[in-house]
Length: 369
Image (cartoon, rainbow, N blue to C red):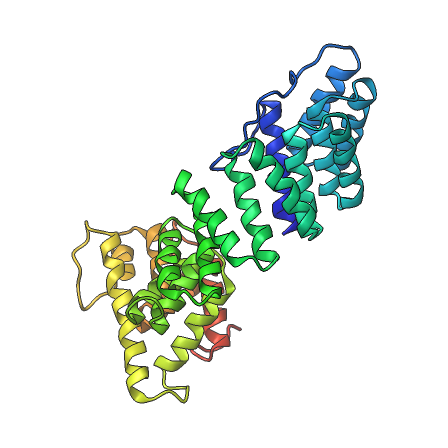
């Protein structure tokens, strides 16, 4: 959580500086009344500019020094104070960050950027009551700050206020329905409150928006038939999408289902057959990504791409087909790993090696020597 907090703080300060180089949050914090970003003065302006640049590059210790220098010349400089708090939090000195931000608020009690930054550091320190107090003060002054509203949902849930967390997330989504993080968080709180009929549609919506963890949980919901009709084919599709975004639980879910399909578990034969069919359905669905190819029951989509000379497209499709228990695709990958394709794919490709190693670990292929 601390890294998420620090990233949010960095974005806030960069937005205030007017020089953000990363994409801003879906609902950026815009607070009226901030002082000019480039004050006059031979000491303040260069130090502030240097702090901005160092902050943007992630050189937090150096940024803290620059912001301290700017504050030495102009103690009420809001951007420098927020930058200093952010920099200190990023290097792990949360106590000093809180001290600096509170010092700024003693001088400027109405400075909402400082109060938001303080709330986030307090969240990182898991000081929930203090964080909630700061966030509620911010929102009483400016109710449309969605980033603060989302953070309030986090804090309320941490305090056991499930209804309050749900309300906070729903208010964010009412203002901005395209917030996948808020939708995912809402779904999780609903799920933990055992309100699965409400949680699963929210998970699926977040999954469709590309949220990796939501994709994993959507797969789990479909696999168990929780909040939706049981659909193992849909579960496999969501787990593959989540696994390709690096969610290890999705990889594990697919590995376990492969063991069921291969008859290596204690599941009834009907469940093994259902798993076999789900993987077969998934392999068949891959043809839809390539409408220019004619689907052929005797050939896999990856093999068709390879035959058409589209090697760059063929390899990831073959890996997915093989991971979905496509034996022809698995054999093709072994050949490609050993021989490559002249001018298009080198032998011993790292992606293919990764698949072969995972298959060997599951006992589906011989170990790589």
